[in-house]
Length: 365
Image (cartoon, rainbow, N blue to C red; front, side, top):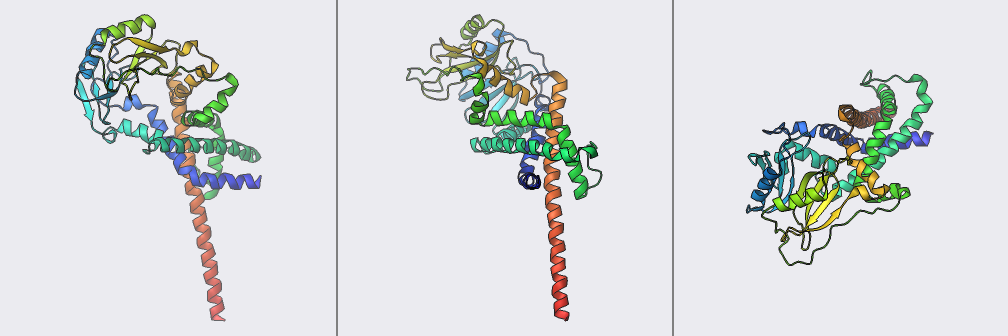
């Protein structure tokens, strides 16, 4: 048990700051839509196909190459446009420009998401986050095991009684075990999303993934080519998936890649859905679909990871629960680092003082 306690303390002291960063950014991202402070953000969604087609037609006809358009939906009443050069804009549902940016650094909610998701480091940052989540999960499990010995002294507090080493340790153990279920869920789902190998391993008992991949088009058209009129495609999509909400339009990202329409069916938890309609960007013809409702248990469970992690289901109660999880992780990580290294600094200073005293005594003799 002593070896486990030593490992827990050292690992927590090393990765605690990163876990604290993930916790505080995650807690803020639960309220991302409310933190998107632009005009018309609170507008009700109209679900007008004609108005939506006009907006998409206008964007497709522009000179600036598009990457994707995420449509207004529950919680945010504006369209988010992302251009191929990394810039973007928010549009009202009528197509009015309400905000624009040339870099994600100019929009706090976008910077916050990238910081939480990738540490501003791209794919490498996502991998680091996944590993950190696994380490955090190990700390949660080992922390519960270590707490069991001191369970008789359980005194849950939001803050340590004193900023001393002993008080911080007691607070850390009690707060950790109190929030352990939420922390475990947050860290596990985060690791599964960031590390595909972990997802495949844990979902393997549910069978292999049967996710439909985008079709490869035999075309020589430029990869940024886009349809000039979206109304026929939107109508055909609505006939194919009646009752589904169109959530995103993804422009082709490579030669032979299709235009992708992303929809959310009523049974899906993910806010943007995982239903895809693939279309030839030159002819507007549908060339393939991916319907998660017809898939196996693996994909059905995979679809639940992000909504649970980001509190996109469960209403206000789950938002508050996941906010508490993020704040607890931030508090546990930051105080672990503070308590460990300040204690070691005091111990080192005391040792140096004793050595100096011994040396002075020897000189005096």
